[in-house]
Length: 376
Image 1: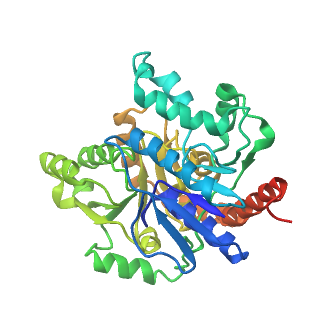
Image 2: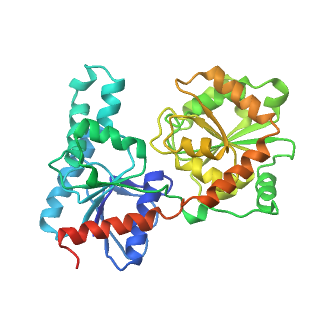
């Protein structure tokens, strides 16, 4: 099988899902051939990675040129099944990590924006996957997006397959005796009475890091002085470090970069902040619940409903209001309910299938290949 992905790096949510699905298919005996513009990190054993050169000065130009190069490559290479993790033509299966672009633009952007080349390019790539004439099957991870694709593209329902959240098994960490928590806090030099806030995500702007800096600075003096914010992810930290300095909280904000030991920090933290501006799913919300870490997130995250159903934290209502966020955080940090939120998240996680996504995705990929006549 051939898998198409614009770029791979170890710390992206889409990239982790891609890797889980690829490895699940490999375990079933399928060859894994990958087309991408860039691969950062080690290549798993048995993966065949082909790098197609980046062409274009903007993201939409590069996306379109990659799609064209991949289409040319596929003409000469016989593929049993082609799985894409970004929107593009020629796919048998598309893993829908991104929300409906057309819905977002029509509902949030001006008519002038819709006249631009960026819009026309991304709409063309999205249309190639979702229009009725397409034969591409869609692996959907955000159920609320289903009706949007049907509304704006008339996508046939039989081509849309819902998947459970895809939590990697290594995200589940058992720390019943609290040793991991103690070790993490010792490494970070955080005392028992201090509070460790955690943010995880490589797109600092989209994840709402600016909102988290403001909320930290807004805390009452006594509470703020014993609270620290740790940020895990790869991104341009410069503007946010400057912002923290201007707010006189730079000694309480720490950037740890991309990490492979995220579960340790989930075990060591006191609260996950995820005040995202937009979020198709928000896998980190589930990862926090699985680890027993209470959550404070915007309600627009695709997986926010799990936090609400589990009563594993609180949600910031839309439209976002910074003062509301400030009050919610202060309330959570002083609430006796934190242990209840922790237990609720763990209990809810045990009742749900948060780890079976890669195998279900592999099932659907195999089914599509059989219907295509590639496999018996």
